[in-house]
Image (tube, rainbow, N blue to C red; front, side):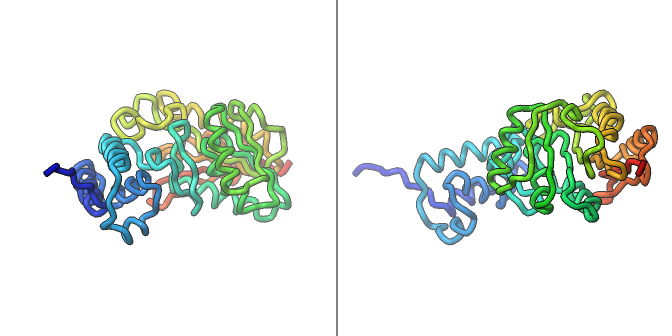
Length: 286
């Protein structure tokens, strides 16, 4: 009699995957999401069909994903998608993974645009396009200029715009403010790199898988924040707002940068964890 290798079931693969990822500081949810990638199905299907056999090629794909996750590769890159502002965004290693803390930028931008009709906004260093698309969807009457110097990142952003049927955003390859027109924008948002270039996290955490140019900015992490604070205000309309995300310990430094270029109504807002996260400042009305 010929021995036939038993085909694993969804339940068995999830049990093995959960054990593997618990050892790597992961768990059941990650295992379910990765098996969903391997089988091209959702979690509901996995639960409903937990006794279904899994073909060898799909099981092998699952084990490859598990190994990558166990080595620290971000789940978003393995799945190719990350939720932001209740929208699913395509992500690749060419773009920074959108994070929940950055939703504060969207909230603040929309608030500052409340009294404006058909406002112009700009998103500098757009990456996946998450900020620009969220703002553009919430304010369909707005025009959003999304800028990034990475052609690969802009390709991802444009695909996300198509995914979410956003037509009121323009995608421009340029270096920070180079594409901006003077005295044009009601709001400028930016989530620039703000990690110190020698920060151990860049080499010893999952950040090592994300684009370094989107994370690191000089020895103190302030290089990009400084450049934007000096250059962006001239592109604001009188009364327009500059909103920049920064590190939890950089609020005072960014407020000083804003004051040095004569922005007013300067304030720093906390993220959900209570850390200083976004500093806002307004161009004078004249």
